Image (tube, rainbow, N blue to C red; front, side, top):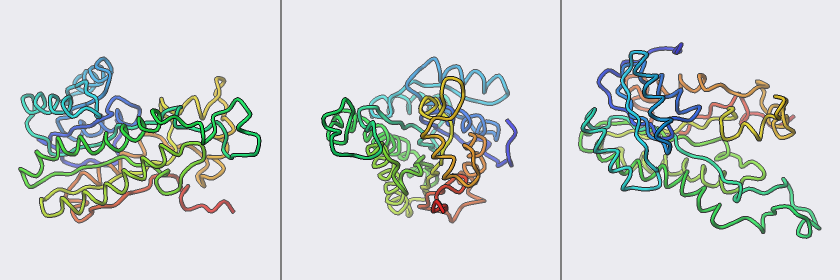
Length: 282
């Protein structure tokens, strides 16, 4: 990987949840290249093992562990394995997250007559889907922070990086559950930063704008590779007129995990969005 700059993470044990996704994989590879021992946590064992094999083959140090971030017992088991292999956690990247179709409306706006149409309106949103989105994004950030943050407070040193979203600042149409859940992640980031401030642990978050991932690719690109109508709106509202690339989050990540570079940065949510949040539309 062509890093924007290099920080010294030699000897650091870093846990990355959602580590086998498009953005998570980029995080893991960059952190390993800086000398960290990377523990990749994801739901699919094959994916995390494959990524660990790639990192180890490139001269890094990584292990892959299958665990559900919504299940504290599975996270505790992963923690035990990481301690046996690498030692206690120094840095946690809470990268797991996602949406669910049952927490999403079919249309951007409600109009009279929609209740009689074959569309999912706000009134049809499924409690199970909404709950899943909040569990995955919010609880899936809180629980790993409990499990691996324990290592940090015992050492009076550590960093937690949460992955929020631009939806937390300004909710997008159609996805109320995801927007609300990411707003909760941003709020929790600030709360935990204050709560941990006397224990030597910093807590910050990155709020990516629009990046092509496995989860949103079908929503943003047609089969022939052309932009969907929703993607065209996004690009029109992004002054840099393109989607971000995973590599472009690495500089912010490395800055936030490096105590020498960001030792007094605590409780912030950093947008990386190509100007999306700065643009009023006119």
